[in-house]
Amino acid sequence: MEYKPIRKVVSGNYAAAYAVKHARVEVVAAYPITPQTSIIEKIAEFIANDEIENIQYVPVESEHSAMAASIGASATGARAFTATSAQGLALMHEMLHWAAGARLPIVMVDVNRAMAPPWSVWDDQTDSLSQRDTGWMQFYAENNQEVYDGVLMAFKIAETVNLPAMVIESAFILSHTYDVVEMIPQELVDEFLPPRKPLYTLTDFDNPISVGALGTPNDYYEFRYKLAKAMEEAKKVIHEVGKEFGERFGRDYSQMIELYKTDDADFVFMGMGSLMGTVKQAVDVLREEGYKVGAAKVRWFRPFPSEELYELAKDVQAIAVLDRNFSFGQEGILFNEAKGALYNTDAKPLMKNYIVGLGGRDFTVNDVRKIAENMKAIIDKGELDVEVDWYHLKR
Amino acid sequence: MNTLFGEKKEGATKIVLKSVDEYPEAPVSLGTTLSNFTGDWRTFIPVIDDDKCVKCYICWKFCPEPAIFIREDGYVGVDYDYCKGCGICANECPTKAITMEKEEK
Ligand code: SF4
Ligand code: SF4
Image (cartoon, rainbow over all chains, first blue to last red; front, side, top):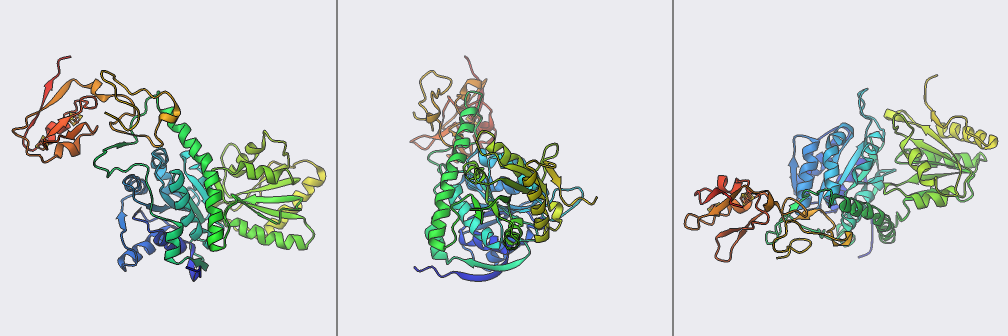
């Protein structure tokens, strides 16, 4: 069958719901939370209108239960999905470890939203990055198209390495903003994403099992090593699945870091998610103004693309890391990870951390220009002014 | 009898896994621990009276280990390497076919 995309104008949340439909998800257990709500409302609508067959929707009483139900469903061999935001994701925290430890390939959309207080419903990456060490893979979408593509790829990658995956989109900037999304005809999604083949199932009654059994000090360590290996393996699988996606549907995701005009760049802006759309636009403007700049969009934060970062870092003079998140007592989380990944290499670009856009603070092309001016001054001087710059602060 | 991973040996109280490659990908096991035989923990032992058993398999469903298995004749048996003597089966059996008796060791 020839690939002819179906173009729809949808919000980021509806893009996620369509991907869930096309992925033939069998169980959705979810609890509504702003700004994630319209994902599960749309899925519920699909079910009510008989637009999806063979799916169970479980309306649970909290996010902890949403993840617990997803774990149960996934342990029976079903393809399971859920979605959440901020405080809801935090409430799931315990169960997130559970899903990854039991090696269940659940896919979840997290709509990035700032953690309270102050109470906020706007975009900020600290909620998802707080879940860094749970064993979940993390994909950051730049736009609605990447939300749709990300969910489909996440299922395939997750089910290959038996690890859960989060697809992360920005609150309101993507979740409630409408854009053209190219969707894939069902038959072609089915070819790309065949039914799941689980490692074990709770419903094999001839071979009853306990899932997540007690591991004494004699066994626990080996399972953690296996989980760590699966994350390493995931890098290869992400590359292959991303390449296959490109060959089939024309959008290549083989690189964990998408490079934009970095080839001859003196310095690059690095960041994740929707803010990188603004950055790419700014790079075009800045190039016309004579700056040799590029953008490096980190698509997958877990597993962390250390090797790709090294390839980038050895050829540039400086990297401006834009963090829409913060780890209190230290610095921006991506900045921290990127510096750590390069420490034992011979790539030593100047690296500066800009804390931007927290709690939905607007981040514009003009902001990128100001950062570029500052970066240029740093490079000319050959040293940093400050390492961590609270860029928007009212002074 | 094969467990999910490793070999169950006569008289042993745990399955010994010598290298990381012998471990399964996911932490699943036959009982509630990955390598210990929970039968070692038992003080009381379930004794099943086939005459009272109506083959409803409620005990099979409820046993947390799962140590209850269905015998070829359709009645239930207990894998004593995994039965930890919790008594849930006896509590749940609708015909009181299972009694918990103090085990002599
Ligand atoms: S006492 Fe009964 S329920 Fe408990 S472990 Fe033994 S067989 Fe299973
Ligand atoms: S619960 Fe009692 S009656 Fe039912 S199968 Fe078990 S022993 Fe037999």
